[in-house]
Amino acid sequence: MTEQVPVTVLTGYLGAGKTTLLNRILTEQHGRRYAVIINEFGELGVDNDLVVDADEEVFEMNNGCICCTVRGDLIRIIGGLMKRREKFDGIIVETTGLADPAPVAQTFFADEEVKRAARLDSVVTVVDARNLPARLADSREAEEQIAFADLIILNKMDLVSEEEAAAVEARIRAINPWAELIRTTRSAVPIEVVLDRQAFNLEKILERMPEFLSGEDRHSHDSDILSCSFQAEGPLDPERFNAWITQVLAVKGQDLLRSKGILAYRGEDRVFAFQAVHMLADGDFIRPWREGEPRVSRLVFIGRDLNRPWLRRGFLACQADAPAADFEREMARWSGAA
Image (cartoon, rainbow, N blue to C red; front, side):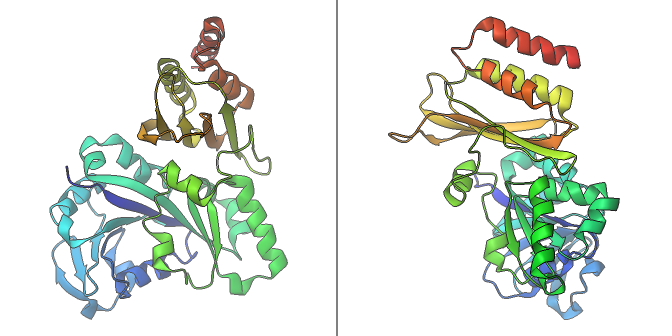
C-alpha cells in the first residue's frame, strides 16, 4: 500500500497573512515539494516566470511545488494529484479567508478513496494580532478557524504591544486551549514548523505537549465555543463507546467542531486514537501500550453549547465495569435529545 500523503489545511481570516505564508511555500527553496490547492492561482501574486509547467488547473513551480486551483471539486483534484504522487511530499489546502475549515477537513474523513490516499496532518490558522478582537466581534468564521486549529500563527506582532498581544492570546486560549501558538511577524515562521506536524497523530501530540488531554473537565467560558476534556480510569467497552459516541455525534455533530481522544479498550493491548470533525468520526490503533504506562482513556470536545455533565456521565458509563443500567440511562438521555 502506498504511504498516505500528509495534508495540511491552512486557514485564516482575510488579511491575516495566509497568502504571505503561501507565497513563501511556493517560492522558497526549502528542499521539500508540496502540492498547494488554493482558491484562485492569481490571488497568490507569484511571478509568472516561477511557473515552469501548467495545464488547466495544475501549475508546477521551479522549486518543485505544485499549485492547483479549486474551481473544481476538492476530491477530484486530490485524485488527479495522486497520479503525480512522486512529484510532491505533501499537500496544502488553503481555505478562503471567509471560510469555515470544517468542510475541507471533513473531506479526509468522508471519502474512502481520499482516506486511502491522504491523511489529514493538521489545521493551521493564521491570526492577525491587531485585528482579531474586531473579527471575533463580527465574524463567526474567525472563531471557527481558531477552534479548529492544531497550530495558531499569531501574525503581525510588530503592530501590537506586549499587553495587547497577551490579551489576544487570552482570547485565543478561551476558544482553543489545546492548539500550539507561535508569535511572528510577516508570517516568518520556518516552513518545517508549519508542515508535517502529525497533529492528528495523538501520540505525536503528547510527545510535544505532555499536558494535552490532561485534567478532567477543562473548559473555557469567554466564548460561545467551549472545550472540555474527560478521563476514564477503567478500560472502555468498545461496543459501548462506539454506540455512545455515534449517538452524541448524531445529536450534537453540528455543534461539535473537533473531538479527539486516546482510548484504552478492555482486553486490548494497543492504544486506540479517536478523532472526529462534526459528525464524521475516524479512529485506529496506533501503537502498543508501553510497559508501566497508565491505561487511561482521555477524550476532548471543542464546540458550542456543550452539556459537560451529559458528556462526562456518558463517557464514564462506557467503562467496561460501569453498571449496564448507567449506560442504558445515558443512551436514553441522548436518544431523547435527538
